[in-house]
Image (tube, rainbow, N blue to C red):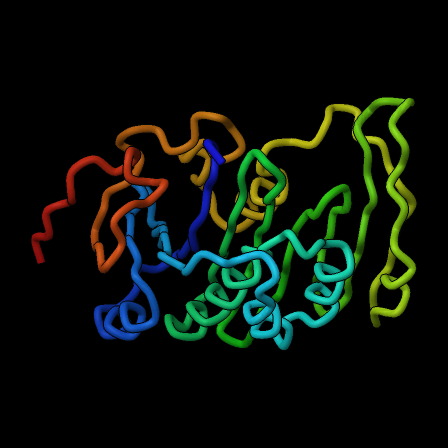
Length: 237
């Protein structure tokens, strides 16, 4: 997980009135993007253990068909870390009364992004094993894929997917260039707000030094964005 990225991207700075409630729920670090009107929340969410499905059950009301597909395509050994990030993103959008984009991705298989409004989750992009998923307005599209290797067998979609309402399984596809690093996150984040390119998401060198200011830290010892932040920005208000 050397290239893990995570966080919730915001277009408006969280109000001071909302921060105590955010802190009550979990630790966080709040960053401001240098030269941009964008803020990034990193959250200290509890680590999940394989086989613990409490987080999955909590996330299911937000996007039932997506969560059901996760359970069908996943295994008992997977902690499904994207589930608490989905729940947290939806809760933050409601608490802060603004649209939020939550993401969690690494170079070992995680590639999750979700957009939520104060009314609920609107879009989810995710991948698990060799299946791409996009959930939007209650409808789920599932794309089996393989690398561009004629000797590699195409993945077979489990029959249980046909039992999920509003779920469509597309024909398998070979990816000519391989699966891109943080592909779902890149696809969603660039449409969410201009200027995010400076964070280097989708590359091995994300978070260039000096691209973020740390503006608040509550009960979070380490963030994947610490190296990008440097010293805390002085508050002049």
